[in-house]
Length: 89
Image 1 (cartoon, rainbow, N blue to C red):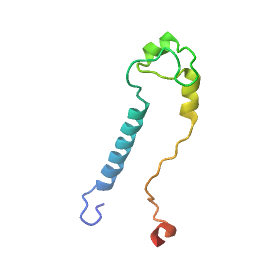
Image 2: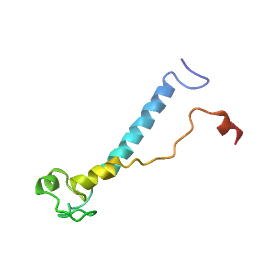
Image 3: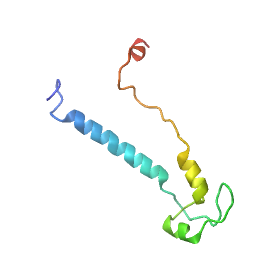
């Protein structure tokens, strides 16, 4: 079903593009870069050689990485609901 001048499936394409962009952004954030450190950047414990080989560019030990991954980071988004409060501003 088309709405106005939009082509059929345009909304689905926009949603898919948004999800694809967000996934790429998240994957780029997680990808370590550069040379692996021999000791953790946070706690200075030695990073096992197997971890350094498995994840090139690793900077944190497993425990510190788990803490970092567990920390919830909020990110501003778009109000897609169109609540009355957002319409009044």
